[in-house]
Length: 132
Image (cartoon, rainbow, N blue to C red; front, side):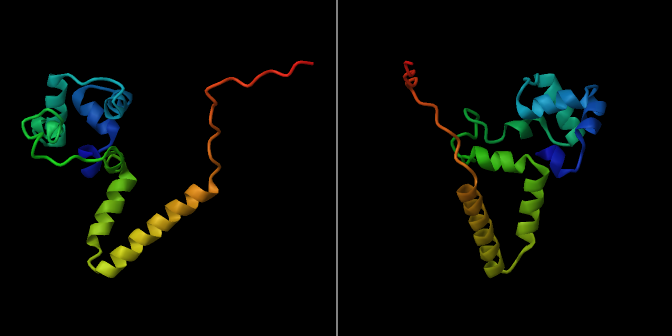
């Protein structure tokens, strides 16, 4: 999220710590774990202390006082579109316009849910075969 916030490419971040952009992608997606020294390097390039990456983490010192952020919100914040959406939304000062915008998004999502075909469920039991 920090990388996107400061408009830094994965390629630029990788170059500055000696990695490929593919490795940065793996870190961001959670495919690969990140060592402590690598977290320090990334923090230096992103201009944040290493502890920035642990704020609100479960089991941390601030775990009891921090709010629980939903995975969906974290996923949204991790995208360029999500950050643009949020930054644009907070610039709207008229409460009625903000409510109308939220209503529009909710209705759009509902329409998408209604029009998209439901995935087929796999039954727990296999269907009996016809005997010919």
